[in-house]
Image (tube, rainbow, N blue to C red; front, side, top):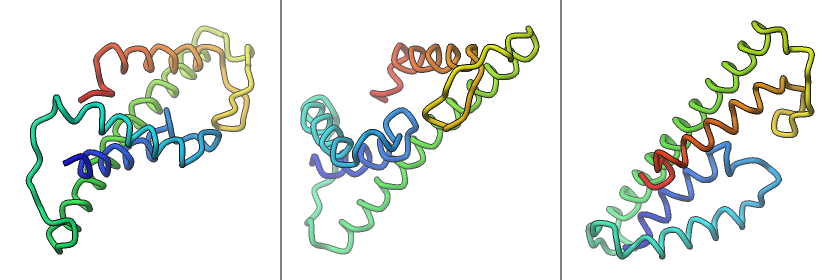
Length: 132
């Protein structure tokens, strides 16, 4: 059933920093989660068939929402670690004066910090973290 995957993906996309920035409207994130759920449904293993209006369905939905939020938080923590690592490396090599405007955090940030964010984004996509 597409609904359970949709719940998980919606929670992950709302929490993840990659898609959770305020510039991307919540409607766009929900439509993106729906499209990914529908397109990916044929290749995923079947989910248990449950009546949509039963109490068990709300338990499954809350389970999928919490799993999705947890996955989004793990990805967000990974990005935060590499952002801090980029800031630390730029201070260590003396590039902390080379600052750029960071619209995500609303403050100036070191150039290497942005490079580390790009690297971890590409690594996340290359390791198929967005699919798992």
